[in-house]
Structure formats: C-alpha cells, structure tokens
Picture 1 (cartoon, rainbow, N blue to C red):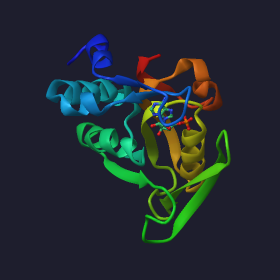
Picture 2 (picture 1 turned 90 degrees about the vertical axis):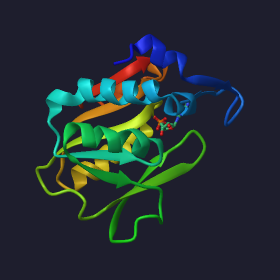
Picture 3 (picture 1 turned 135 degrees about the horizontal axis):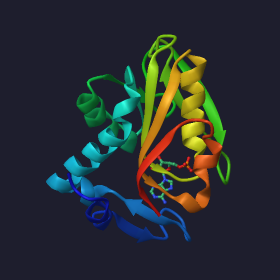
Length: 174
Ligand code: AMP
C-alpha cells in the first residue's frame, strides 16, 4: 500500500478553479497512477473495513470512481447518488444550499432496504453540504449510515462538524 505522503504528491492543486479563490484538488494524476489508484482504494478500504457495510453509497461523479472499487474490496454492493434527472426509476430527491443558490441529488427510492448498513463515499469533504444531503436520503430510506469515507478532507472548512454524529474517515487532510 502506498503511504499517505506519496498519495498526496499525486493530487494536483489547481488554483482558482472553478472560481477565483478556490484551490481545486485534482485527483486525475492519482487516478492515472496504477500505484496511486490502488493505494487510495486500499487506504480507504482499510479505514472503513471494520464498518462491515451492506452497501457502499457513492456520490456522482468522483464518489463513483472510488466507491465501486471500495465496494468490490469490501465485498458489498454499490448504490449511486446522482444529479437530478439521471436515475431512471422512482427517486427520492434532496435539495441543499450552496454558497450561491442550491443543488439537488437523487437516489432510487428502492435502492436501500430498511436497516441496511451503509458506507457513504465521496472523493472530497469540503463544507459537507453534499454529504449531509446524501446521508439524509439514505436515512429517509431507512438505511443506517454506519460510516462516511473520503479520500481528501479540507479540514479548515469544518465539514466534519456538520456530519456529526456520523463516523467520518479521510485519508488525506489539508
Ligand atoms: P461540499 O458539499 O462542500 O463538501 O463539496 C463536496 C463536493 O464538491 C465533492 O463532490 C467534491 O468533489 C467537490 N469539491 C468541493 N471543493 C472542492 C475542491 N476544493 N477541490 C475538489 N473538489 C471539490
């Protein structure tokens, strides 16, 4: 497994994207590296192994990239949380506030059975708004949010506090 420092070296910081003042953490160099990709997935799997989820719930779109191999590694299934209008069957929708305006995410209404243990996954925790909305969808379906796992956590934005009392794991902190 690759150490956290070498994973960090594979994350490119792009200043002023998508807006002035935002330092975007670009994971594409890590994805392109065979050892980086394997190291990131195995570090996330190790962090979440004791959660023993029934399902990994990944958030579009980088939550899919890490969530599916994580589900394979942990031996469970995968459920996508998607942007509006993408999922074909009946959905539950959650709207959440952004700095300017709002956004929504959806999950299939039959994606989670009551009582199933869920591991929620995304690439990066910033303010936590997206993951709070995903956790709300999961619990509305009767699922148990047993853990939440990110590759990257921007600690200075305090997203972890918004996700209390859920268990939150991250591999790289900025
Ligand atoms: P938030 O809801 O504020 O926690 O934002 C999380 C979502 O926005 C994740 O899906 C991230 O991929 C994306 N995101 C937010 N800030 C950044 C950033 N600085 N670099 C890369 N992705 C980001």
